[in-house]
Length: 272
Image 1 (cartoon, rainbow, N blue to C red):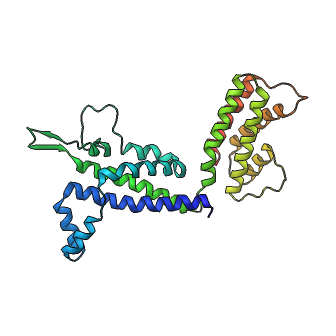
Image 2 (cartoon, rainbow, N blue to C red):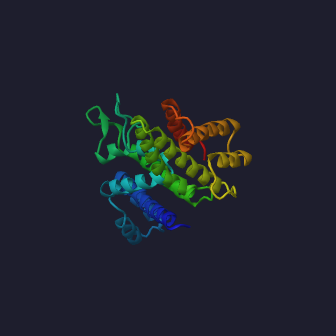
Image 3 (cartoon, rainbow, N blue to C red):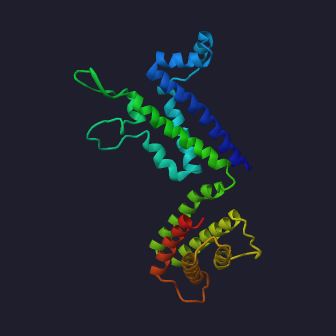
């Protein structure tokens, strides 16, 4: 396990431990005496142990925001496709015609929001609605840990994503400024690095000392990692890149470089 992966693993362990305590804390905050009785019963009706256990639980409203921010940062790196789901359990929709149990979120709970009718006699929705929302956030954090521990976890690829996105943005800016060859060269390097990493992830041996896009593309096709349409698409990008690298050939067109920039971004998102 690399040092970086180890840090993610340790942080996820802390987040899960703290999240479990926060889950108990929000139940204590909402259910009070009823929750205390449950704890007492689980500890053999030992009131002293129950009181000591409960005293060690964090204050949900004071501790949640820090936990939420740290969890966001880790999920963004480990399972970025779940980040929007994670956030959705905290942030309520921008437009709510009415507040119900279904759209009451953790943010509402932190604000102490309760909806009642008949001058407070009938409760429409209260803090109990936030408990399953937080539980789902905690489940996503636990899923991140399971993903990190999986042998299929491609953490290096995730961590490279931000760097590659930045390089493609730079290539796009160069293309707009008219530096077509430079833009194409950057895209070519990004595609090569990405395909090389995909080969490594799937255990495909690259025997050539300095493989190009076409070499890596063929290895992935032969290994059954990519489809024929993907192979053809990547080969098309390789042909455009070659125009940029050979000074004696014709100049690449603006349209070709635009295709290469957009295509590079597509390869990063679809070939893994």
